[in-house]
Image (cartoon, rainbow, N blue to C red; front, side, top):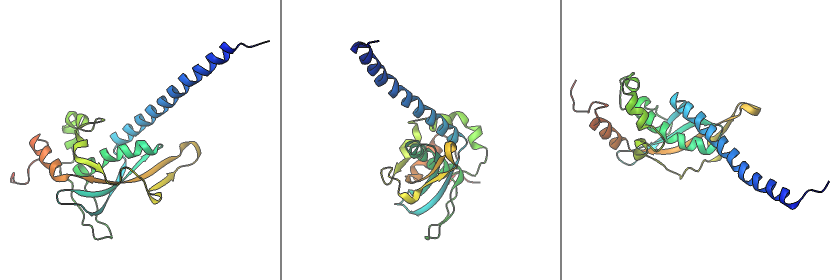
Length: 182
């Protein structure tokens, strides 16, 4: 049986169309997983050094199966950590920092605001930047799990403009100002 050139050509064209769509689907699934991890706020945060005035220089450890997704989620995690968790001091002389709010249920009370705030490309982006252009040093990449369930714990250096973040949240009526009294 002789197979024509048109048949081979059509198979080749379909391959170039379908393969990128499959990869796009995998990336979209990885983002959904990362968004799920972000909604459960699964990350670790640590102070690295004192940033310039009004900023925190921190390392955020995010969890994901894909490095690129973890890097993007680290930005959200960093801002969330500054607002709700704060961080412990380090052995390098970095002092611990308290969260911007002490209200434990603020995130649930203002859920609509924070869903919009932390949406992809949301307002949180105004207050965060990657300090090393998203480059991950070898010591900041750890493999967790085995075989198919493998996941990465990736440490990203992030700078958060905490003074601007505080002012923005105060102006929006989300947190009380420092001078609002007791």
